[in-house]
Length: 311
Image (tube, rainbow, N blue to C red; front, top):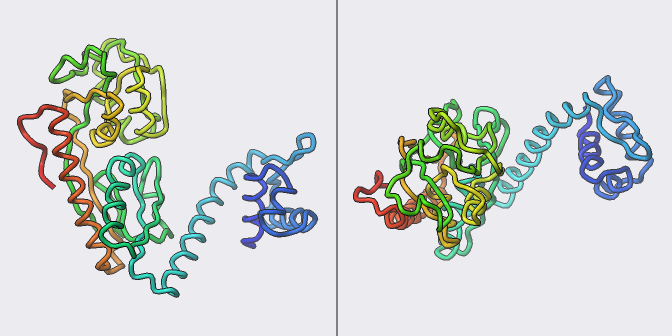
């Protein structure tokens, strides 16, 4: 199967038509049409159908396209990996991270690392949800930031810290007057949730499922940062990742302890077949410095008498 056909199909779907696809892949429109026809011959079933003047994916074509995107991502990762070897970029890091960790502390760590080492170069591949069992095959990366445990034979893991999920609410909400918010306090409250298949949603739902009257799932957002933003703006309440919530405290977000406790284990993972570079070890140290500062700010926000487990 020719990679040109896969790239042409991707360009067609993204651009919405043959003309846009031709421009993206630097071919003429007749050439793109022939490439797509050859791709259909190769796979043995129709990928596209006409709807008026437009070409859209068939049902089989949609499934093929979803699978195909993983192959194209692996191809791009291989090209980057090869280029890095060719240019010998000793200060380059490729980081795969769960989305809620990117805004919570990864961006701050990159800014600090760059201030200390201006030659540092970083690429971030944020995923939601981050499921190493199904997303790491063929990817080129130096480290992964994710919730532990990670059960994958190609990875070594290192724990960074353990924190409990927190209750978040607008500044004028009744939760602001509580030291701790219990699951029962969420009954019938308008709730801002993450998607049903996300790890954090699954963990919080386990605690909230004990309620007779579950929260009113009024809003659903793809990322933790969206959830915190909506809650701070008065759209409802939520159970959230504590570091993601901390990143939005400046909006007036109220952060309180949540009961029953839902521990989250933050960790790093590294390819077992790849020696860690000095840059990777340096950046891990910066992450740990940033997390210590985040913990101090979180303790203040929660008015905790006992600090979470140290980094």
